[in-house]
Image (cartoon, rainbow, N blue to C red; front, side, top):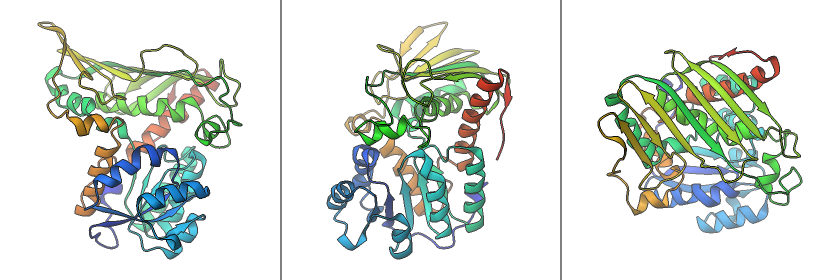
Length: 361
């Protein structure tokens, strides 16, 4: 297990953090987390190929000009760092994680860990060989509704059926040539884009977390139905878990007006329905035979939680606290590997029109 690997040095706080990638996700969500963790984390160096991104994030965190790099390898070679975060197009993750691990730096990577299991195996080997902590951002399991749902599961008994939905409608000009980089690379096969690995990725780990049993087999249809792109715009999965339970995952980029971003879990003594993609006060409902469907009060919900709409602040808080205390990371690498294995199996199931068994790391 990666969480059992010991670091080569103890991290002191504030942890010295380098950012590989300073684009949209960093500016919208990551930066908010770092600004709430000033006693624990200090952003000391940046790397991005876009000068405007370097300036925006560099100025926000008062990073010296000499610590702003256009080549992340230069940052790894010259900056004094304890941890790096990686927030770049999917196709770059494997190379950047491995370079950081070889530099002896802990790694927090945005999802997915890689675009293929071959790349993921190389990552696992590199972090084990170098003895560095490594984790992947599964932010939606840290929203208030998801955390509350986890506390309700024991009372419901063993879950036997679950489903999750994450659908929406991309802009009419969504393509690999879109002027907005965040749209362009997501629509590109070469950059590791596609509905299942970008959007449905979240629905897969959310429902698997609630089912509390790994997936063993996958049937699926991962296809391009409506959009003029070279990656999938729809993903439909039927998963059999190791405990015999069954779940479905539905994702699409070509569906208007959809009630999206929710998971349901059905068990012997009742059911739960949670809006895992929205940090809202009415995110969790429970069904029992006695009460029917009932909204549950979220005792932890407050203004700070409302601001953390995607769960990133809570994820980074728990992750950096674990790094500082030398304790287990809240999202072990094996979880991210399993999620990617489900995605790769779904693609194979689509091609071969049969159930595919999930590969283990």
